[in-house]
Length: 345
Image (cartoon, rainbow, N blue to C red; front, side, top):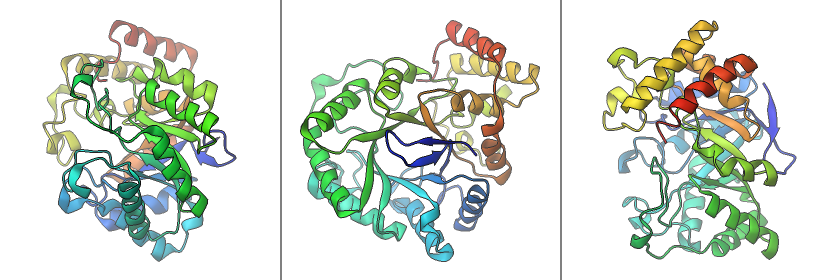
């Protein structure tokens, strides 16, 4: 396994992070235990979860993934082996504290205490804001068009002050963001610098061969300010594995179960995926290996969050850490990207 520092800290996290959002929905607790056991065996020390999980989010499965991880910690008595990341949900989910603002002190506190209880731990290493309260462009939206619908949102400074309280108490080690923009990230960084408040250490945003929008604006901040990307959906919900090629609908696959998840299946994405699959095949790689190795090699990436429902998928995903793409392969990838940039933002 390879490791990188989390932000500007001495905490070394594995380049592969174990994503967990299918546990409690597509995966049973026993299957999740097997995934965690194998990941630890292979040197993965970084797990990512959220109070919102499992996915597809609904009231019945809210918090289910954290409970599974907590049960694993209790059974294995190995909390110290894992750098654990979780998230407080953003607004507008009615079954989570009424669906209103979630980053004010009251709701932030309730969210953290609930996660600690479900996870059966005294602390969370990286606590992330799952998505912004303010109106902005995330979850597949490009452009900034909805500011006229702006409602009240918790000021950045207030959020950092709340986080400081829990960092001082030892319940959180570090703070992270998710689904953020250059505006949000730069504001958090500047406030922490000038107000002596906790510093954001990471940003969890989508990044893959089908979505390279992070490279515009965000990547420079990540490198210059040491706030690395935790890349999610590096396989574009499995599209980049090639398993949906030729209109296939594999049994049990996420996009088979949830046909309304069309972010990665538009016409441009299908065309690009075919081209990336061909590059992989021409170079003796699987589409999965090509896609994950590309993400792993980016300087602004701290960790690549992989998620699997089957053990053979998990093994292939973790093994991608040992693959180095040549300059020639990267050039081929970039040629496809330049002609069809980020078809699934």
